[in-house]
Image (cartoon, rainbow, N blue to C red; front, side):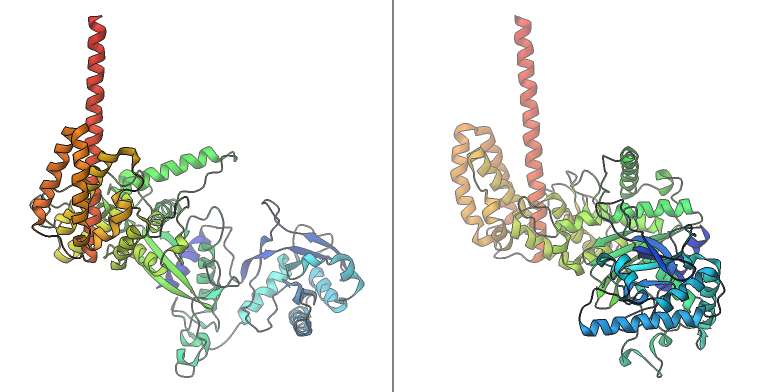
Length: 629
């Protein structure tokens, strides 16, 4: 399914004339220099092809014949390669390295004599002449080949033909077509296309997956006898034609490309996620992919120095608005004309596994189904007051499940790779959130004391979704529902011990603040939250005794406030019964955090209302005085 979808995606991009996509038998590779040779095969110049648009020079990307798959084997490329193959020169200095370099250069010469011996093209004849007379330690090498060129990729150019390289000449392309046609073998039915054709022995290398080998890793490979059957070798165990293997490998490498304009690739923990859309038109596919980008990615960095910064900001605001409407469950047709409900979406998560890649998750659905699951995700997280200014992407949520260090930004690398991947899967599929997410959040509350709104919202989402999927409750529960954790704001009727204890803890913290004001160095949350949420019986009696001392002080200065706080304490304690629980389980600790958040938000709301009333009273008094005057 994965290979077939990628093969179809390659064909569609090729039909659309995508210039970044390599045609069959070719590949986009990093090239640093061009060796300029005259018709006699003499090296006359070296052209620097490095890209100097960034802070430091880097190889430019050029279309060249596809390289063979290498490990420890010696396999030359056609009409281009590293300096070791082309010139017999590398940065290696040991005797073993020099011996291997000599062998690779001899293989490069023999390979090109095999394919170019009958060629009459001026450029190809000159290339053979160059290989025949080139001496790795000769005078020309000393003049033109510098140390910084060693181990870089080189192409050839004929003197006087500055518009193209030798591998771009028509005669070279014709020979390349013969090479592809002659890549024979036993014909088998391709598992991707269903056509009868020679199967590829080694599948293409996939580059761009974080943590995998920089030279590339295999998505499909059979490197041990235990993975084979009926004495079949390598790719013959799961026959895929050379063309289909090229197509899926090229499409996946295109999706994984590291470029600033690639919005189809994002990292979630150790998982590299790519996604693409299949629609009737290219515009519809691009609109769907932009929407998916908002689900996964952090906001793009806008470079204010660039002239296009204003356009980038406008595009980002437009995308953010569309994403917000999608998260709220609005119909796709109301959000954008190019957003079609039946657009097919593919999401692939890859993780490194030695020299191979493992598929962390693979999800396919329509844009309509994904949008409904996304809306459900935000409904599950919904609380009052709203825990976010803009709907958080998966990237932001993962930052909430790592320890928050004072003065430092959260690092995604600190998140559990497995947990990050399972969180993404739950959002995409609408299935249960991983139970380890709740455990992780509870540990983070106790470790850094940051009971942030998004963390509490995630706690609620875990409990809500589990309850709904278990009991098939509705998304919008009524007041009569006995599933009290489904409410998004303070529920004074909720009798759950964990929820009540969280509310009580918030009121006790408010009592302390009312008594000590700004003089308090550390609140009870800083000192006792972990113990209060896990072993209430050992902490709450002490906190209640201290609260009486604080209330005595508040009565002297603010008697009305003291009465309100005492009423809140009494109301909650009456529901708790005659004793505190000795311990709370994991889900009860999650409800503790929700109760704490709800009660604290209600206290803040009352405080703001009281301040507004006081301001109004002051204004009225001032106006009256001015009128009397």
